[in-house]
Length: 238
Image (tube, rainbow, N blue to C red; front, side, top):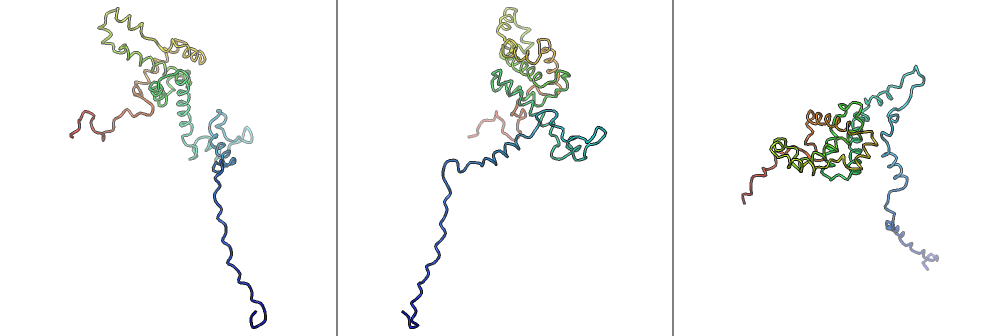
């Protein structure tokens, strides 16, 4: 006891440090929350679904007019919509052509040749037959048959003129067009393409390839050589 007669007060201990909460390491704790995932998927679903989906808003009456902001969206004058229809059309050509190539079992090179041609091809020259699947089948037929003709040498008219008839008959017997493939024939029937239409549209395609310089088009490959690269014919000086 102290001189004052009162017992000494106990010295209080320092406040305990807050416990450090460790991050949970249980399976699934680091995944995206369900609400965030649903919101992300909803945003990604925005885009063209049907032609009517491109129209936003309606006039209040048949004699009425649309709001100026809505009209700007329709006419792609809004910065967020500028060029959207052209980009969507290009992606649709790529997607449908890739699907048809996969269905027909084309090689990667044939697929890239067909897609590279379709992506930059102006379809208006095909008139009423300019539907993407129809033109894509014509492009696929041209790409595959042309490759097989090159393999046999049937593309070289001067060389063909020098060959004897028996040799030519043997070469043409070895050539098999993709039009002889059952799957290709089924797809042509599905999209109302007969042999006459295929041949006529192929002539239109060849004219467009000449006009648009797409004979060497390959998707994902640049046909122009980088001038900064060294010449392949120059050997090492070491």
